[in-house]
Length: 373
Picture (cartoon, helix red, strand yellow):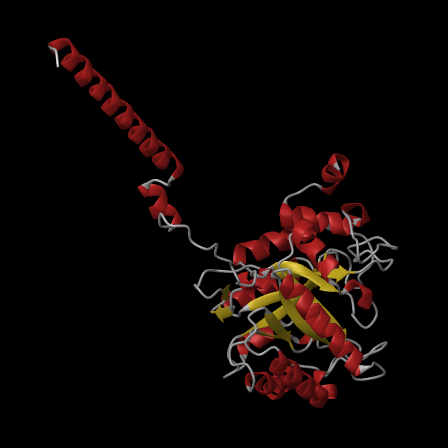
């Protein structure tokens, strides 16, 4: 073989090796481009091999998961981390009279648009269709259950209210109250969203605090037999305005409980606000389970100035509050206008009182929001 031929052979061999090397490099680059990086593997939890796709079989969490167990400590309502809680919300009108307003769509509207965190289910014990008089007890219990489920499913606390009014003295239907609260506390035992209000507005000249206290001492054990930790609300005489009397003679061994105060700002003014401050100084744990800015009758003019003075005082002392009433009845204390569809409420349905509440609870001007819609 000549020298020139040998050179050509070596050159052809080198070109062949370069071609093979280029091909192998191209294959390596393609493999890198199609594989996840080491950091991607660490982030995704996948290996270089193809893993079967995982399916999340967990049930979606409901809004009720956000409800913390509540307890009273001194004058304050606290959550399970011992952080102060100030609830704001709305009370139904008597569910005996306005059952159609107990539904999830209504409660969700109150939460999303009206700043609600708690719903009070007011069940009259006497009066028209009363639980202890001419009402259908099974039907009313079913309505309570519907309300509890609707409130908790929308992430709100719910108060089961034994709504005495014309029957004044809670001892009149004490046996029925014991049976009722024994039944519902067994059903909802351990549910952190459920609160029990055992006597709305005790009233009458002979209904003193010792009378109410004796009733509470009979009823509370029925709840405690099923639920040691549930929050219980106890009314005070004179339509829930004799809190200072309770402050002098507290219930003993009742567990987690608070005393209720009610006010209607056009009637109850400086003296009643002073009474609340006095009871606060007595270290009485208080919860305003019903209020309005009308006259005590639920009608008359709205006293926004007195109402704001009350709200300022409640904010100062960190006291929870529930407004009356989720209703379209033709009266000043109704949140909704007559004819409101309870299954599809809107901002346009709000009365002047409803608009005032929305402003206080959320800081939103309803007129401006309706115009923007």
